[in-house]
Amino acid sequence: MRALNPDRLRTLVCIVDLGSFAAAARALHLAPPTVSLHVSELEARLGASLLFRDRTRVTPTGVGQTLVERARLLLNQADAMVEDVRLQIQGKRGRVRISSSTPVIANLLPGVLGRLARDHPGIEVELSVCTSEEALARVGEGSIDIGIVALPQPKTPALRIVPWRRDPVVALVPSNWTHPRRATPVWLAGRPLILNDNRTRLWRLTTEWFAAAGFHPKPRIEHNYNEAIKSLVAAGYGATLLSYEATPALVDPRITILPLTPPLWRPLGIAHRATAIERPVQLVLDVLLAAPVAAAPSPMRAPVSGS
Image (cartoon, rainbow, N blue to C red; front, side, top):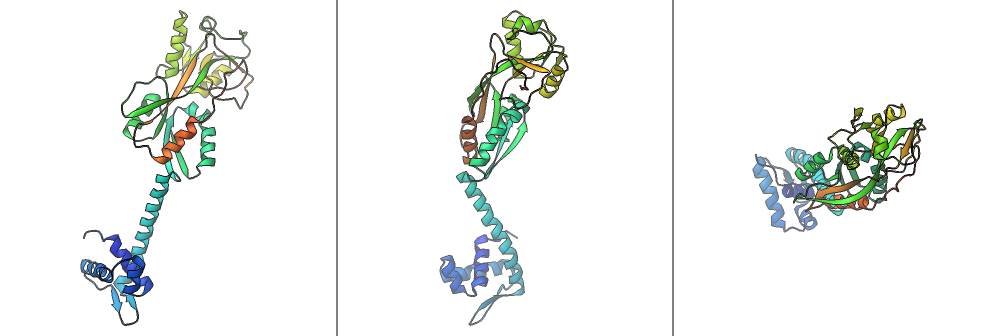
């Protein structure tokens, strides 16, 4: 059996609620013959009478009452579905999927999500962890809406990638080391290093930074979990280079942060589909692009992050 027409079901429910065909016709802004036709079509489809008709009031048969009860649930769900879609089109409700590296999610997005919750409380954000290449692929296929990626990235016709922020890369060194006020390639190349591996954009940046000064140091450890790297630095096992992405909230006295000479910057961009941007996605993009950028650090003790 083909699905029952929701308009016909709505007519039946209205007749039962109001007790007459004429009242239902007025309420639904339909001609009386159209109301009668809707009921006849339902009865023909189901092969059963749905209404008892007398001179004073129309009431449902047993089959009609069952159909009316189920129709109410179906119509309420349909109305709620339409309302949810309407609110999403208006940007008052919706879910936006964002992907980035763990440090960006941990250090940069909390403030952004706080402002989003304040200004657009009906928008939910779903976060996932991806490399920049994975994020671009997922934005392109539509499984996420926004990717926060390291720059530069190759141009893709279906995507738009806009610069977001540029964060300084800094050196983290054990605080019990004797160190200069600023870390240079020659100074760091002579120390044990703990660096990101070659799957990351930060690895490429730091490798080029050392190479420009004529150095190609081999790290003691390559690791992409930055909290583990910082723990190793705090234990005195080596120094590292990470991106300074946010004003530090916690202090670890075992780690000192040193600015780099020459300076090194890690740029980030925001990737999204170039066309057909839904209103909730645009509102999240607006909040992201309005986010403040932290200033570069002076030598200090505090946690940082990278990707």
